[in-house]
Length: 260
Image (cartoon, rainbow, N blue to C red; front, side, top):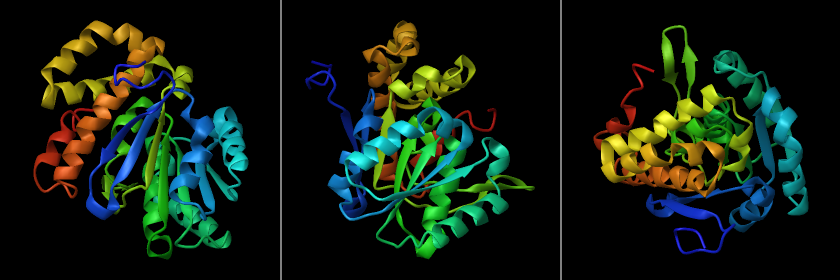
């Protein structure tokens, strides 16, 4: 049993409560293997357009495709170059054009499979193509799992600054796979761990103390990692549920972002 009282291997479920637009965040190891089943439960007739980058595609796309195939989900894929440079108007236009070429409909879903760049870009494309399609976030970095994949902020950069153009577009589902983080370089993992710690700083001193004690277990991929992700996601979900459009308390989530 995990510390939620559920059998080992059962994903932890956190809900973002937005009334009729509420959605689940599922946190677990190897959850990508069951992505198809989770998507079919929520969007039984949707085709899926996967947006990913070359790095994630090379390491993890085969696993995701197998899961979609096993659930009978029709899919297409759009692969972009990795890195912050792709978070721009030109790449956004190419992704939207690819969605239209694939004849994606509003009842279909864009699946963002990557880190924060992919999530922000694909989420923006989903929000504007056909005036909005379904969106599934499958973040592959710790930072994206506990921050950018949750809450509906999407966007791109311009020469005048980061994230200055975008839309609020909430996902229908977030799948946070703790196991996929095993392959992250330590620098990238640690950037995400700092974001996890932020939730302790702004809302939960007990959680912050727990992180100080258990950081080795979280980094090693033990069950403590799933707990850390789930608690951080719950912290963000609660704030987003209270202040979706960042008109008040949600501004707390920007702690450290200017410095970063």
